[in-house]
Amino acid sequence: MQFSDFPYDKFNFKSNSVIEGLPEEDVALLKQHMVSHSYKKGEILFREGSYPTGIYYIKKGKVKKYKTDKEGKEQIFYVCKKDELLGYHALISEEKYTDTAATIEESEIAFIPKDDFLKAVQTSSVLSNRLLKVLSHEFGVLVNSLTVFAQRSVRERLALCLILLRDKYKEEESTLPVELDLSRDDLAKFVGTARETLVRLLHDFKEERLIETRGRKIILHKPLEISKIANLY
Image 1 (cartoon, helix red, strand yellow):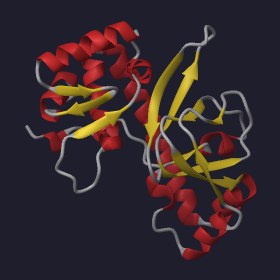
Image 2 (spheres, rainbow, N blue to C red):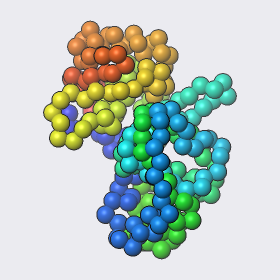
Image 3 (spheres, one colour):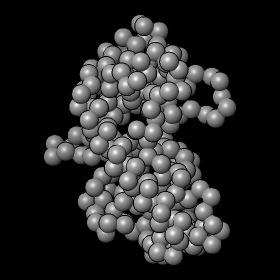
């Protein structure tokens, strides 16, 4: 068994494939009134229950997508990285946002106005076909994630989240161990457990020499062994 066998596709959206390699005229439509903005860590892009006015394209940084319950507790269900799109679900369905998106580190994000995006979708068969495929895939990702998280132990869920985040934080062509720069609170919300339980399990992983910690950073030394704990092969 090799680490390359890990089923990333079952847990990752493919919104980065929507814009990549589009015909020049379609790209021109999307960029006609596109504006970029720098965000500090913790800034909100959009809130659950509000109406969309456009879509977001991550040029740099990372964004968490999460739901909030009646008691105000967050459950992070996805982390977006560079080149991914956000906010198009609500725009296409003409409904309110069903989740909230916020930066988890300093980011540069472009905003494409609603009218420009919808015009591009209506006039470009390439873009509309890609969106259809991406939306279909994301439905499968969400169903799979719900099933897996309902059936796995907290230890297994932590291992899975560490591997999924590894994919978000790894640098291309780097052979160094991947460093995750994420708060314990956010990681606990992603795993779906209490902060105290998360800290205890991270300590166990350190004792097993699977990871190392430096402040809030988590360095993954043995991704294959961690992926085995996730129990997905």
